[in-house]
Image 1 (tube, rainbow, N blue to C red):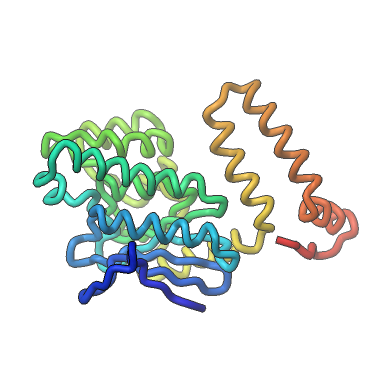
Image 2: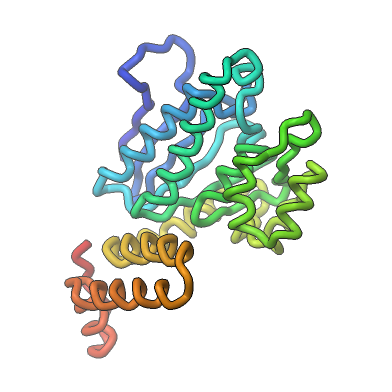
Length: 270
């Protein structure tokens, strides 16, 4: 096991770091660490998140990434004070940086699991919707309440609208009302709901399952899934066919098929 505090440009900070990063038993955990500010996604927080995601990409010891949060709130979304005091140019940079973080999660060739307690609102809800999988505590709630302050959650709607049915997304976006963990489970925003005291264990149980799969197959599969989703059906099948052949030709693919036919446990290379 090892730990990192992510400091862009190696800045020194007297207070607690905004993010924490650790790897243990093949599972990397990126923890949002600003509970006093409800883990608001300030520019500084987003920079540190992006650095941690890139670190996990290059870390062979990290097979799965969990995004968790300290304190009672997962994330309240963007730092409204920062946005309200910014110019058009600075606001543009904040949203561009947030998009970089969300796209880094989608493009990471490793599974990403959100571990959600308390509230996940606005860009915090966007973060959950962007992750490949999500586990929520039974008391978690999800909302895109920007409409209540006159700023529609347009960027969160990109991820939310791809994660849940249109009617559910539009209800959340147009009313700003939160949905419960159980409703989020029904809508497909989260995969599992756990008792609050067992959230960490439930998330790690899922992460261990993902970490046991060959990294090569997971990387090819995740990349292809998001790529084909943007194509029409014939193009999607054409892409998927190529990836299946590539997967079968990979040493892990050959080993997996051989192990199945020989009725023995596979010995993965990656």
